[in-house]
Length: 75
Image (cartoon, rainbow, N blue to C red):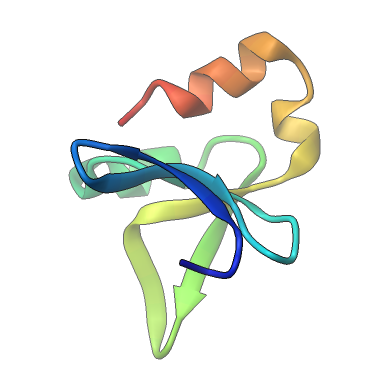
């Protein structure tokens, strides 16, 4: 999906890289308002609006292994 590579958990996308190099994360949509305010978070917009429970993350927000782990482990 998105022309890139993604990793699945129980048959659902969890994290991935799009064909444009964007890092994508998936999480519980009920936490969207809070997580979308984290540094580096960008809306994932397709069609008419943002996809609740999905975000793109700036590369500088995942430069260190610890920073990347924060995003990867929130599913």
